[in-house]
Length: 278
Image (cartoon, rainbow, N blue to C red; front, side, top):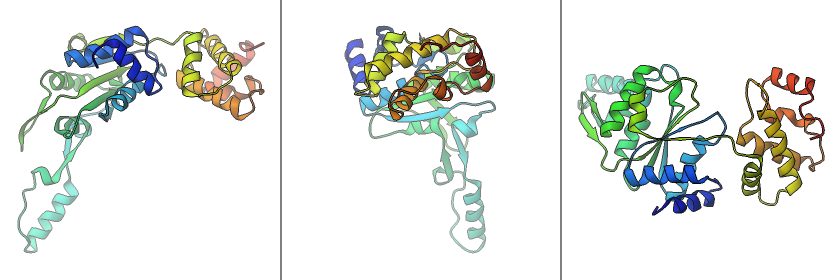
């Protein structure tokens, strides 16, 4: 990747249309070897950026899905206690003793996988970091600073080739400033109806212009409302696929469940006749 334009073309080759700001941020993540923090509403395509970058560069995608209560045993490593117990029983029965806290019994989780990855580049996706606890975020700060971890029984493990790191956040809470300082930052907004129609045409080659425009205009109306869950780009594409499956003539209201997944939202949209005439 020699320029933001290279990144933009590479992502487009994987079906992801990046605007100039996103392409520049991704290019700088490559050039400066710094993590890239992507924030935005759920469904705007943050996770897809990592997938498309990995596919475009031939890198392996290693994903850590964050959640409440995530800790080192979920993210870094754990020991295979069942196999250790079997090894102990085998030794008691006369088999050669084995090192119980060595690589043979180590369960590698995504962060350790990324550090030890060999055979080419890797993209480490740390998805929805805002769902993790403060303690894990503090640990992650250290991890991103050195791209190394210490396992007491094995010592310090450093990355021979640091992965490209993409962090995503739906901004359900504010991340600590210290973590943000470690990262490049880019906010991904919902695309305009015109750009979203372009995305639909890219992801669904041959889709009639009328279907793409109709769905994108309807989604734009929905996003103007105060709903529990706004439709993302993925829902827009699926809605277009649904209309194609129904010959493109079905009413949007009949297929509203493709775009909205909360009953109260569907009831509100129908009561307010949001899609009337769409």
